[in-house]
Structure formats: structure tokens, C-alpha cells
Length: 441
Image 1: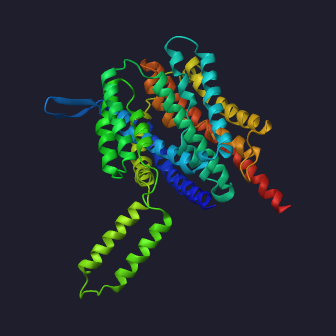
Image 2: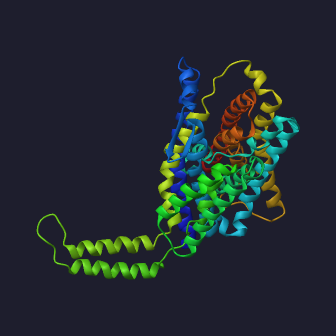
Image 3: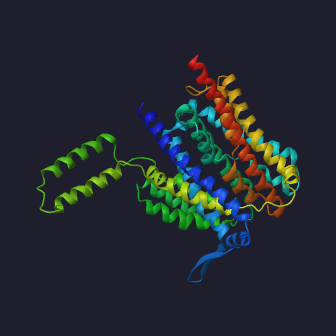
């Protein structure tokens, strides 16, 4: 019961942060689109190409601003995804196979069907490399749409969408690692794995310092993967898996220590003025240490990353990647094979995959619908799964080198995500309206 309550609170706080982040993300997308289609569009394009880097002795690393955003900052986004995934496995929705089957199955369907839809239009050539683009779900935007309904929708539906999106993100990471990686440097990869091994050793040795995992994760694993040819965002996921997800002292031990420290603090004679005594200061430091030992490094880092990812990293990613200069025949762009593959894959492929696989799992009694959730809610949420945006744009940059294909993909990702969000919102609104009428009758 305690685990269930904790999980619901964690999902609630996560969803709230993502909802607010979704608003910021939407505003940033609008700014990027206006900027890229304004008289200052050349400055926008030039800004993304500015070389930024550093030199340490004979070692130097200089890359365009766009690459720093997509490869470095997004590694922190994937670190957060990895931490969320590990938390879910250890004590959340994914810790119970019975309750995890439905969102996992829905996520798999939401990845497989859109990829097949895309591939049916683009079976050969460079265009075929884009099959991973419509597989993605943007958790911030999809939860943002769900948040429009406030408490009128059950918490279990948010839990379903969060779990589905996290599994979807993991699928995206695996797709990137297996299919969008080439020219691997064995020596650099070995260095990355050695640093990862050091993180694992630190975990089992009881190292709980966030600086230890940050320095080795970023300065070791990320840098080695960057030069290895494997996309460095994978380093974020690996680092997350190595961060401890257990407390150093149990709850009862923590409460006993806290009680003793509290009594000691009360017994100390206060000093005059605004300061406290040296003994009181020492007791307060002991309280901090005890509190830290009762927390998991995983949850501490995840909590610290949430505002950074939601309000800085994802908006910067949107600003750098959503600035599309609209030109040419947009109808032709949207009805091209790449455009149809992405558009139909995100809007209808996602819906069929998520809703269809959910139906099959429930029909064969392998899973059951969450509490207070009905099929109309699942259908609306299935459309929200078609809001690809962040991950879709990310995979697009890895899939294509041809500028026209990159442009076509970006245009269709934006329009398809918008359409999927509208369809999902309409279905959920209609269901909510019917529920109100039924209650009145």
C-alpha cells in the first residue's frame, strides 16, 4: 500500500512538472517557427552552426551549437529517462509484471505499427532509414494535453500514459543504438565500457556521491561514446542504470536516529543572539547526513534533473530543431512518400498500435484495463501517443543527411503531432462530456 501511494505521488509530481514543461516547450516551438520564418532567419541558421568547444593541452573539441544541443544536452534528457525507467522497475508500475503488461504491450504496438506504416511507403533508398521517426511519443506534450482535463480523468490513465511513454523512450534508445550507429571505434567503445564498469563498481562499493557519477558519467562514459561512433545519448541511459536506487539506512533506523538527534538538539542550551551553538550546528549536520542516507541517489538526481530537462534542455532542443523555414509546395511535401509515412505513422499507426495491442491483451486476458479507465479513454490516449515531436525530431537528425528529406520529415512531424494531439483531445473531451450528461441524468 505504501509503495502504491508513493508511486502515485511520484507520478503526480512528475506529471505536473512535465505539464508545465509542455507549456514552455510549446511556446519555444512557436518562437522557433516564427524566428525561422522571419527576416532574421539567416541569423537563426548561422547561430546553429556556430563552433563551440574547448582545448585542454593537445586535446581539443569543437562542434557546432546544434550538435552540442543534440548530442550533449540531450544526453542529460536520456539520463533522466534512464532514471525514470530504473525507478519504475525497482518500485513503480514496471515492478509488477501483471500491471506492466498493458502499457508495455501498448508501447510495443505503438512502435511496431508506425514503423511498418512508414516502411510500406518507403521500402528502399535513403528514405527507408526514416522508419524510426514515427515510433516516438513525446511525454511532455502528450501529458500536457492530458492535463487540460485536470482531475476529470482518472490518475490511472496518466500512469498508463507515463509508463507507455517511458517504455517508448527505451525503445527509441534501443533503435538509436542498434540501427542509427555506424563507424564504431572499438578502442573508444572499450574505454566507455571501462568507465561504465567503474560506475557499477562504485554502486556496489556503496559510493553515493552524485559528483562521482556525474564526473565519470559525463567526463568518462559520454566522452568515450562520443568518439566511439555510438550516439553519446546512450551514455545517459547507461549512467542511469549504474546510479544506486537503494537507501543506506531503512525507514525505522532513520526515524530512531532522527528522534535521538531531535532530543539532543532540544537539550542543548541556546546561545544569545541570532546564531546557534557549535553543538547544535554539529547536530544539524548529523541530521543532514542521516536524511541523505535515507534517500536514494537515483531519486535525488532524478528530482534535480526534472526542472533542468523540462525548462532548459527540451526547450533548447526545440529552439534548435523546430525552427523550420516553410517554403515550396507544402502539400507536395506532406503527400510525398516520406511525408505520408511519417504523418500516417504518427497519427494512425500509433493509434492502431496502442489501441489494437491493448485490445488484444485484454481480450486474451493477459492484462486488464486500469481502475476507472474505459476504452474511450484508451482510444483518446492512443492518439496522444502520436505526438512524436522531441524523439521524432531527434531520430530524424540521425536518419537523414539529405536536406530535403530532413525538411520533409520536420514539417510532417510538427503537423502530424499537432493533428494527433487534436484528435486525442477531442475524443477525451467527448467522453468527458458524455460522462457529465450521464451523471446529470
